[in-house]
Length: 95
Image (cartoon, rainbow, N blue to C red):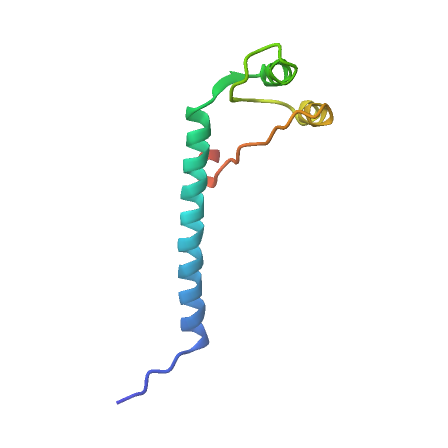
């Protein structure tokens, strides 16, 4: 009867499986968070910078918004003290 010997290959394969499972779980949690944000926010599209400013300066009711902004617009918002953050694009969403 041959002894059961743990080889580097078996350890690497096990590690790869564990890492892939952890990656899939992390992506699922991020996907849930993004879905929750989108479900509880108004999509203002390209009007995002304008709407963010209105909310920040009290010209519009405070509410969650999502939309699009260029890097220049995002930089300007941040310089004005308006907190913004990008929503991640997940691998399956890019297709």
